[in-house]
Structures are given as structure tokens and as C-alpha cells.
Image (tube, rainbow, N blue to C red):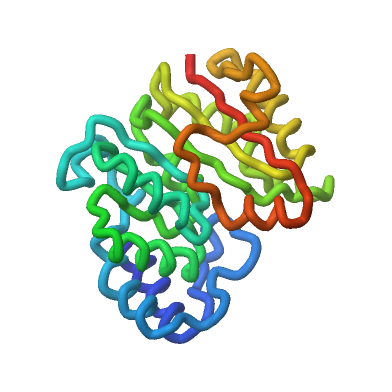
Length: 245
């Protein structure tokens, strides 16, 4: 993981995509976008090494990743620009949050927010969240966030969607009973796809009792830039909560 982290840092410094070995999982799209400004670039180089969680060694004790040994650990899959992860970590200092984000620009934005707020309960996984999930112990998470994932609307790309029968089973393995999967999307096809796969697994229960339970966001919801973009375009958003039985 250290070598991989250094590749991300080198890519951020040179504005070139990091090397990707052939045997690694393919991530679609660029890992580096616009050139980083001086401060985000410097903070990324300074803080990413000691905030990075490695999936290359056993992760038996997630609480040990944090200085305060939190009672519960949450995971955000695809943190994007980090506004949600930073807000959730700041509002819940007693928990530990791992934010998975493979794109350098998003990592840099999240690190800037973490430094500015002084977060100590945040750790980063700078790669595909699937690799981290495969390395996590059973029943090790109390909550997983999946917020505005790429819907891959074309049928030939459905295999790229994060939610799948296999991933639903993997999430059931790592989320403890009573834990949650929180999913937000503005793609109604993706919402239906997710409901189909999660309701097909008896270890998950959709908590909705009425329309407000999926039309309204969760308490303390800080929003995301993707949500704001969807609302500006007039697209409704849904907020799905699944309980691990």
C-alpha cells in the first residue's frame, strides 16, 4: 500500500495518472483531474501517508487505526469531494470513519477539509473500495454509505455497477447485525436495481414504511455536491436505508 500511495502522490505532483499493474482491478475514468493548487498538493503529500489504510495486511482491529479507539467504525464508498465524509466525521467525533476514494483530486479536497477542521477520526483508502471491503473482517462495520454512485445507465455497462449480488453478500459479511447501508441516488433505475438486489438477500431489510422514508434525507444530512447538481437539474433524489438483520 505504501508504494501505491506514493504513486498517487507522484501523480498529484506531476498531474499524470499513476501506473496501474495489469493484475489490478480496472477503475473506469481518470484518477487525476485538474492540476492541484499548491496547498492541496502540499497537504496531500504531507498527510496521505499516515491517513492511509492498507488492505495488504490483515485488518483484524479497525479501532486500532484511530487514536481514540472508536466503539464503531463507518465506511463511505466513493467519498468524491469529501464534503459528506468531513461533515459526518466532524459531527460524530466518537466514531471512526474510513473514506474510500480512488481519485487524487477528491482525496486532496477531503484532506484539506480534514486539516482545516482538525479531524482525527478519519482514515482514507485511496483505491477501489472493493479491495478494502474484501480485506475487512466479518461484522466489523456499523454503517456503510454509498452516495450517488456512478449509475452506468447503459445495459452493457451494468456489470460495472457497485451494487451486485456479490457485493450485497460482501456487505452483509462486513456489516454487523443491526448495522446499516445508506444509499442515495438521483438515478431511479439505479435505485430500482439496488432495491432488487438488496431485497433478494434475506440478510438485509429495507426500512421504508412510507414515502417520506425514501424521499427525505437522513437526520443531520449535510448533502453532497452531486445532490446539489441533481436538484439544480430538476432530478429527484432518493435515500434508501437497509438494515443488516
